[in-house]
Length: 121
Image 1 (cartoon, one colour):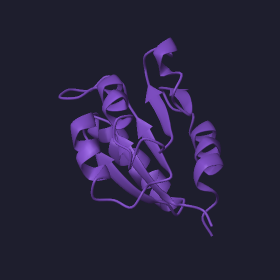
Image 2 (spheres, helix red, strand yellow; image 1 turned 120 degrees about the vertical axis):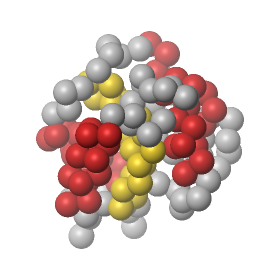
Image 3 (cartoon, rainbow, N blue to C red; image 1 turned 90 degrees about the vertical axis):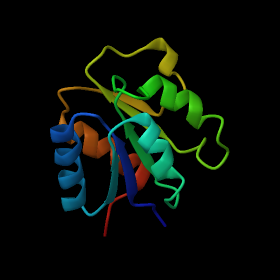
Image 4 (tube, rainbow, N blue to C red; image 1 turned 180 degrees about the vertical axis):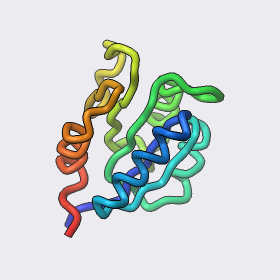
């Protein structure tokens, strides 16, 4: 049985909404947050998503701060995170499931998501 919900944590509204629409068309349940703080709050209300897509450069709580806070919350610490960012991959990201550079290659993104969430029937 595969999980089919994804959380997108991205401050750029156009990117966030475009990814949401694409992934919903693929059959996934998608939740969004505009920064890391909102992402943590949403995670408290969701059943465990199969994957988090995380931007690094955001206001309020950036991606690195989100990752640090997430690892201290037992209920969400094990949820895989794929960093989706325009900045070069950071060596401090070793505890993430992957890194996809912006602009996003949608074929690579979908292939990555299917590894963690399976194919939607």
